[in-house]
Length: 84
Image 1 (cartoon, one colour):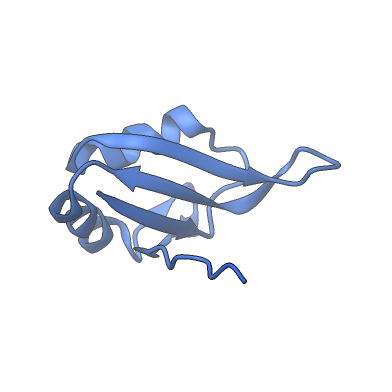
Image 2 (cartoon, rainbow, N blue to C red):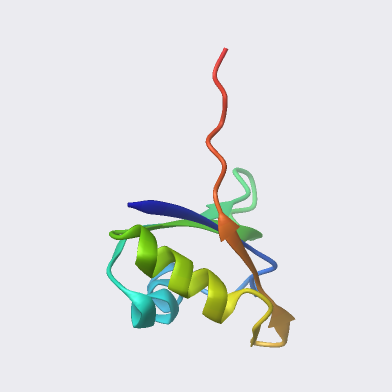
């Protein structure tokens, strides 16, 4: 599996639309757009988990720098948070 970090998303895109975009490159296991806890507006970034690492790499190659809804996406492998 491979977890991806996507930023600079259009604030009106929803999980189903985002998952559909990434599903072209392989099976998407999980999609989570991050929302503001008070306003429930999208913060413009998300995490996706792809079933296979090679599919995640294909998605990064294809979608990083691609313009979607007037915004240029930044797609990379998500870094694991350190817990102390």
